[in-house]
Amino acid sequence: MPNLALRGLSEDMYDSLKRAAVRNHRSLNGEVLARLEASIRPASMGVEGVLARVANRSANLRLPALEGDLLKALKDRGRP
Image (cartoon, rainbow, N blue to C red; front, side, top):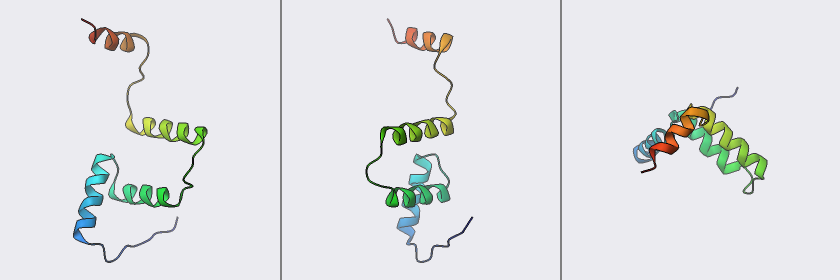
């Protein structure tokens, strides 16, 4: 896999990227790659592409599956 070094990055840009990486639960490298990919990806994405991105993000978040007893308990908790 090719590597790329960035030179001339201002402190402000570096800090902004670091904060964005934390917000998006990514490494700094992951944030830069995601932004580069987004900048060259076609503007319009089909339904399948959107669903694939949602599935990928959900898998990376490691959230519990909302089904069965857990789903019922969460629904019941919100009721008076």
